[in-house]
Image 1: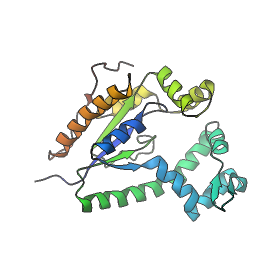
Image 2: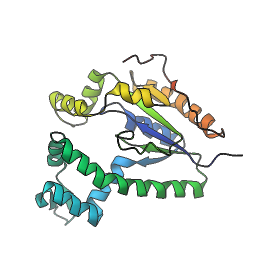
Image 3: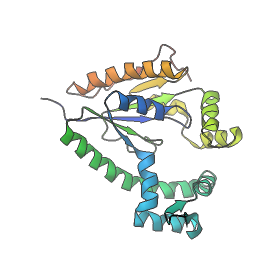
Length: 227
């Protein structure tokens, strides 16, 4: 019996790992892409229930209006709060993730109607939120902490010290690797990362053609990650 379509692949990784670039490459190769973090940000600006919940958690002043009258969220204040308060972070996740999952199910339905072979779900806390359940495979993008810190600083995510504190609040990379079906170790140039992603895409296509998900762990790099 032919397996369902589309094949659902999750892509996750810690701060600065390069997971967004891997997802961008996969989208260029023909995968549909669902960006959980982007959808969450949109919900924070447009969903009335989420907006009310954000105000209850962080205070009404976290929202303001720009010159055009559009809603603006003070994300720096929220980030500073949740990374110093595990309770606030958990409450934020409980508020956002069920709504994001509803949007993901809509994306799955749309992909099925369009005959898309692979739908990639990018999420920063895929395992932590339990939303890996129901996926056919999960890819973890891993990298040395020094490289991750450098990338995050270059993207304006804070000073090296701030980035390291944020990394420390996330699940250890080794734990993510142990739970993954595929691991892509990002240790090189963008060209090298694209080649690794092309190899990964081939494996996902092969898995999508099978009646069963892979069920085994693969390392898609000659430079095996040893922790």
